[in-house]
Image 1 (cartoon, rainbow over the protein chains, first blue to last red):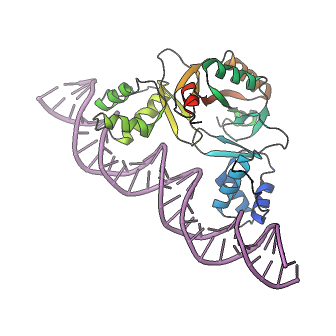
Image 2 (spheres, each protein chain N blue to C red; image 1 turned 60 degrees about the vertical axis):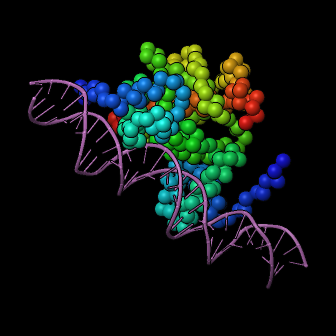
Image 3 (cartoon, rainbow over the protein chains, first blue to last red; image 1 turned 120 degrees about the horizontal axis):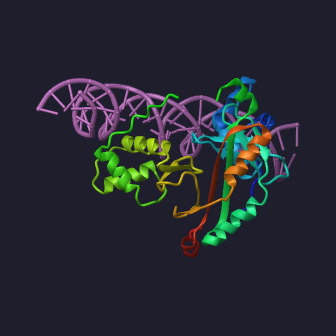
Length: 137
Length: 137
DNA sequence: CTGCAATTGATAATCATTGTCGATAAGACG
DNA sequence: CGTCTTATCGACAATGATTATCAATTGCAG
């Protein structure tokens, strides 16, 4: 109805952000910003927030809300549309997992209660082998 | 190991909060505070936050982080220890659901990747029948 | 009943995120 | 290629949720 999505301009900042995102880790907007800065970029914090948000909306990046309330972003493979992660609570490293049939299962549960337009979030966190060995847990 | 949990004092404020919590809805700390105030309580906002936090730690209330980043609290049945909800994105009403074997499943996925101390969050949201009918979606 | 530490409440402080606004530059057009 | 329109930028103020501070209270052990 109100569409006509105006694709974003490819600015230097946007390119830098997309580029940094290549290392597929979960980081907060602020953390990505710091990383850019530490590499010489002059991109502003607000810009990083704006870019990550718009990327999250179009599904180009994953966004998860951590327990602390901050939002973590991570690049997401091109084709994939919905998947889940097992993230280390200590170092942040994440591996993609796949939860077979959960989509269908969730929809079924929803129907059962009369709820529609079901959306789901599955967040698995643990302590990765390295961190467990380091005893940081 | 560092236990010796000093049980909290039963103050008027704490009692009021526990009491308000009886209507088993998900609300933010601020929302619970408003409700208390609207019923004549003089309990302060900080106190509500403190009480809800400590209750969440002991597992007496459920705490979920909404997409907006705010934390929502809800009373949790005495004996139950871990369960999930299907919450309406429009009116907030939630029903408890049960996801059979997910605990074990999660632990297995963790083991498979070498991750330990697995913790999981499943958040299902949808639009309840009433809200769907009202067309607020 | 007494006394002290846990708890409270008003308020300031923090933190992540969003809004503001003049300056800048992407990209359409000629 | 030069211009013009306007999306985007960046520095900073503003917001909103949550946490810390600290003097005043008040459970509750003795």
